Image (tube, rainbow, N blue to C red; front, side, top):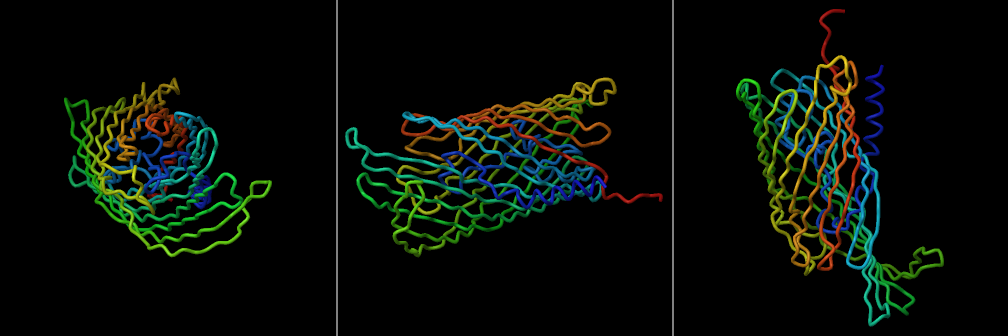
Length: 418
């Protein structure tokens, strides 16, 4: 009965999973928006390691991890994010609470496992105002708003090729809609100019991975990993509406006239990605590191090529791990808790005003086991910053609290006896 309730709740939540504004980052103005998925919450607490893999936890960053599953697993996670945005002249705060992912892992045999799920790929959620002055007099304001994003549904399989080597692959379908609005207000002019843009994007992508495990000094396991995603393109169906508007006393827009403008459909790049990782540990502890490189130099913006914006290949370094004081303790619950921490440093590949936008964060978290089961509750946090307040840019400081639920059991195994 409990399993049916859990499945029913997850199906209900999945219908609401991506009907949200998932970010408040001003850098979601560019490209396909802010890259959202850094791994499930237990992995994010370790810096987002793609090398981490065991027989109970899924790591969808590397599909080779599906091969080692022992249990059916359903995982869901959400995040509350708090932003402090600072330019050289202004300061703002924002917060968002979102559901992040719904993932299912299905073991088939000792060597073969499957996974499917819904994940965010990118998110758009910004509100920007650019004022221009002549002396001390405000002459012009540009107001920019954006919402939406790109989501991903995937199906993947992992197979254990040898006792030490596993291979996996994901087939991914990406889809979403991005809406942007810009308004030009001129001081002393009754009417303003408004432009609405919509892009409906869709396409397919692939992700492949390898995991190699071997014993070191008989007590430790050395894990190495490789993942590769080839470059792909999304179809973008674009529409545009321009209008002359004015505003009533409540601030609502009143349209004087509007016009549909024909704009060509386009292609949006999903850059290639290569990640290498290595880690060492046992059932009590693990420490690992990843290096990821993405071909973001081919990235483009949705409609306009801004003169002050370009792209370069991005790179990321992540270091993290976990520690369990005594995983089989019967006397102390907190000795069975998993304690996690990590660090990541990323060059996002976005250059504005010839300045590379960097993103760095520290993370930590706890996995609280549900007594008598293989399930757990993961609670973690990430503290980081992106960009800079110099050179006409915005520095984004953020703090996140994430919660992940993992339900694991031998749900679909047939009974030997009635």
